[in-house]
View 1 (tube, rainbow, N blue to C red):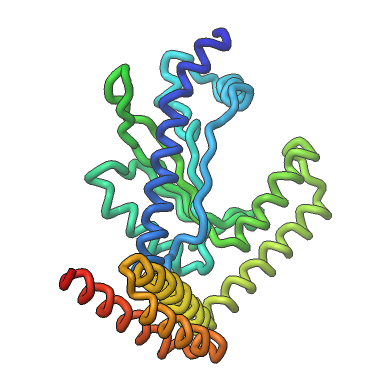
View 2 (cartoon, helix red, strand yellow):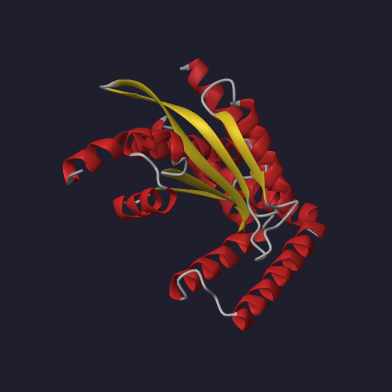
Length: 267
């Protein structure tokens, strides 16, 4: 199989990853726009390299003709969450799409039951439809969902496995398990103050969106030849921003939105 074959073979997988990452990032933005806490912290995607695919073919005796069915993680998406509870919220979001564009075909919950190494993550294999010039292809995509702390540990484990060629010394493996337990403690501690953190983040989000809206509407007033009003609102905004009075900033946002709408309707 030459380079051209693999380039063409992987095109739909790259498309699937790009589309899925875009969809989850869009969900994250929707939460933020309505001032709600997003269970999605960040989203990343990758397509396995040709060398990794060939290695799997060799190790598992996979037939090239049945490659798409027998290697289900050629395309991969990783979703990072702040809290362990968020992982299951993301899983529910995916389940709601199962009848649409993310049919769940396999689940591995390493959160409720971690691997002996200490590895924790939630894995789903989905079947995703890709529309291309060749028609519709339903491809397997692996989605991994984990906390930021779990991901940090996983990166370290992956690096050590690579260094020791999957044969990590017992002493290092024991320290890795201890580190996994410490990561688990961190996640549980963060969960205990989850509500306080979320409230603080919501407040920050409201402040940020209010400031953006206020400045946009002040600029709009200038465009509507309402310079005097715009200048007055600028002064009010500067005072409130300096005082960090979030409640008054939210009220000013609503007042400005009403003011601009009224002027536009009378124009």
